[in-house]
Length: 329
Image (cartoon, rainbow, N blue to C red; front, side, top):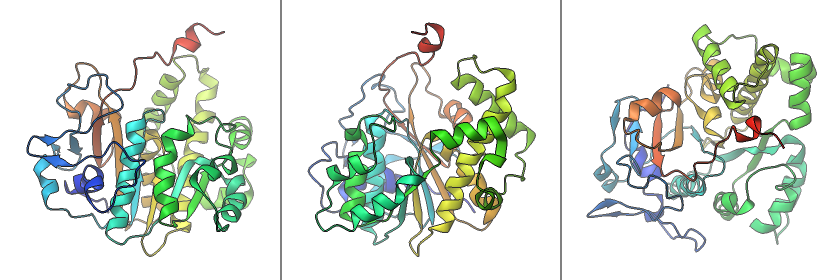
């Protein structure tokens, strides 16, 4: 069962208005008579009418901002908070959403795409130390070494998680094992893990085609044809593993996943695997989406990024992600 209610804005857009505000969250978002107007960090197309709005995929409508005046947190067991990895506003919104969940006395496990499984023992040991700090966690996570955007972008999320003593859980297989899956197939995984992921369950042809198109686009047209199927398998392994770990670490208060928008998409991402394993699961996927210049129709974004709720933010930059492919160093 998927959650369907525009009260999601209470979760996403009004988080900062509930309870105390930690000092590091300087981009607080509260309603005013003029509406929802946060001081965004990203600024491109800030004037877009979509910025700050949320699109409910079930009602096919923008959610009225004044709905947030009657706070109501959705009772959703599995919440997936998407992101564009390098957009700081997306991480602030994720942190604020977590804080709002805590505000109604829920204490979910929090899983991260950005943390590889091999680091879990070190994380657990560090968090048991009485003097553990957020910034002390960074070297434990080998953040810079693992190639993620600056720690400062993700720090607000970990601040909320550590302050509330929530469980931090890894979901990443690591680059070496993913490369092995691409080269060798499912046999590269430990047998017990491969069996748990149930990858024999096929995606519908149109969803498989959609995934292939996304992979080709992300490689700017330079992905060889014989690599598409192996890359598709690698993506499916990542999504299935995240779903498996959310179910394995489900708490009485549920679980929250922090991951890229591609993983939280409701049609073939992690939600697909959650429902395949537990059809009755209550799942809410939220994608934080950068607006595109001149594109003001929410349905256009929903077609490319299916999710239960899309929250629109300004764009961080206009850098061409394909420039490196076209002009390699």
